[in-house]
Length: 164
Image (cartoon, rainbow, N blue to C red; front, side, top):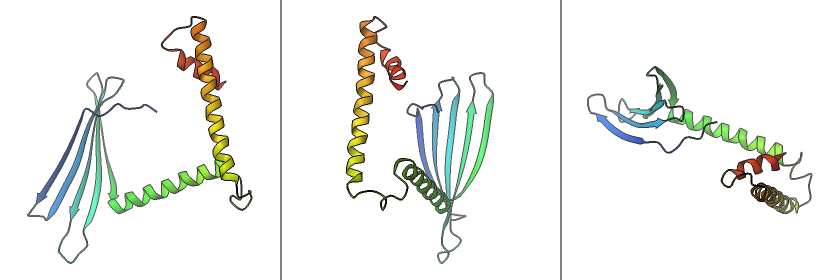
């Protein structure tokens, strides 16, 4: 997964069309990728209400266009559905991620299968493991520097060596 730098430009627009009683909101993000191509993404929300008595619905649409350094373009349009549907999908996904973390990290049957002080123990055990890993990275980096294996990039090599 490529970590993207801060977007170069972010434009926010809001337009109200009196004839159709529709409000368009959009966010446009322009980003230059590490391979030299440029990515433009526009997320548009269209709020429409036919009358004052009906409930308003908001539909989301995402348009992305990637222009490569050679000039070729790749455009895609995604209808995301209503805001409520997108929020519900996000909640379901967050719940699945939480459940996966709980099943991976905590013992089966938690909290009934462990002693009441288990979370306190697990917290300190986690901190101990993190401190031990950091100590390994720093010690390996110091050894690499002492051996003359660079001054600036030793941390990446030390982290790789400590992971093994």
